[in-house]
Structure formats: C-alpha cells, structure tokens
Image: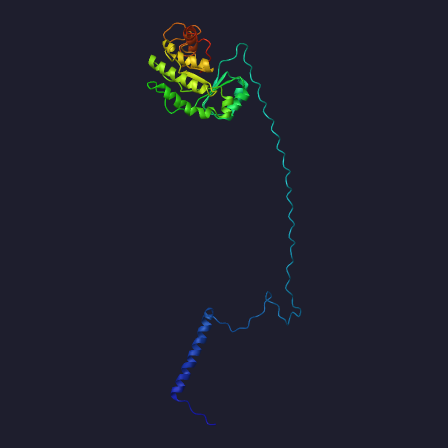
Length: 316
C-alpha cells in the first residue's frame, strides 16, 4: 500500500498539536498542586482496609452487646399521719347575776345574729324588743328564756301625723299589722306589739290625738287577742305636764292588758342627767331627766292620776 505524503497544511496542524501537548506536560511538572487528577495507583497503607490476598480471614463486624434496662427502685408510699381530733372548746359557765332583784336590762334586736339566742339563754333578759319578726326567731327567744317579754315592731314608712284625725290612722295601722301579728307562731310567742316609734307629742292637742290613736289601735288588736305597747316615747319625752292628756290610752291598756312604752338613753354616758350628773347643777336623787325619767313619770304623774299599776316596757 502506498503512503500518501502529508500536505503542508496537515503537517502544520500536527506540529501545533504536538507543541500543545508538550506545553501541557511542562506545566504539570512545574505546578503539581494544580493537577487535580492523579494517575498513580494508590498504595496500601497499614491503616487501610486489609487486602483479601494478604488477609485470608475476613474480620466480621462486631455486633453490639445489649445493655440490660435497669429496674427502677420503687419509691415507698409514705404512711399518712392521722389528723388529731381537735379538742372541743368548752362553753364557759355564764357568770351569775349578783344577789338582788332581777335586772331590768333588755335587748333591742335589729337583725338576727347567731349569738343572740346564746346571750338570751345565758342572761334571761327581762325584755326583748325586735324589728326582726321572723316567727322562728320569736320561738327561739321564748324557748331560750320563757320569762322574757317579747315585743315586736314593724317598720312603717312615715311617722304618725298628729295633726290628722287619729281614728282612721289607727285602723290603717291595724290593717298593716294584723296579718303579721295574727300568724299562728307569732301569736303564740310575741307578747305585744308597738305602733309608731317615738312620736313627738309636744302640745296638748297632739298628746290628745296620740292618746285617741293608741286607745283605738289597742282596742282593735285587743279584740283579736293581741296586746299593744303604747306611747313609745323618745328619751326626755313627752313634757311631763302633758301626761294628764294621755288618760284614754292608759285606760285602754289597762283593759286589754297592754304596756306603756318608754325609751331612755343619754350621752355622753348613760348616767348623764341622772342624780347629781346635771348640766346646770343640782341633784335629782335616784331620778333622771333622760335615763331613769320613768321614775319621775310614775311617782309624780301616773300614780297621782291613778295609773300607778300600769305595766311599762322600758327600752334603753
């Protein structure tokens, strides 16, 4: 086979390729770090994986040894400490009243408190006046102290008009009170009922109208078996000279076994205005203008009028 000679063009191309290869080889020798590819065959090292030819026995990977789960130690349940039973506080023995006549002190109850019945049972007050008219309270009071006089009072919206005709006013009052006072439990335990509280009868005409009012309401209630407490004057009232005009009311409570209501109190102490404790000097003995005024009323007015036997309920 006859070889064709290279043309000049082919020769130059081949020479150019050869020169490029030589240049690349020279660059690889001058900067070995820039050669990213290695054509050398790696040599086994001591730390490498053993060759199958030199290590006929292949080592098997070791299997992990299971660690036993520790059994938790049970926490002992503490034994509950028994709660000691509290020792009940003994009820103190009430201090007995000193020797002498029974006390005339009473109570005014505006609302029920749990200590009320205990106090009444221990003290046996002569009188209890209450605007708390719950029949169960009335029953408890009388069971705690059967000898205590129990007086009830209802709350009225207005004070008694002593410039008006007293008879219609008496009927209107009885119409309000009678449905309450005639309830069976109240009828059994309440001893009497007040009408208006502390009316101001400071003239003869007003005192006469008050007397007519009290006489009429006492009669109306008395016919239903309900007793009345009349007057219920504030401390220092009425003027002593007006008692003679109150005779019709006093006659009514004598007939229907009612009571005369007198309120007594003073300030700055309860004794002020009694005996020698007078603002203008002097000594009233065992009487007073505020507290102990009832003694003046009975001694100097009711007894001379023939009403010294009238029962009175005094609230202080």
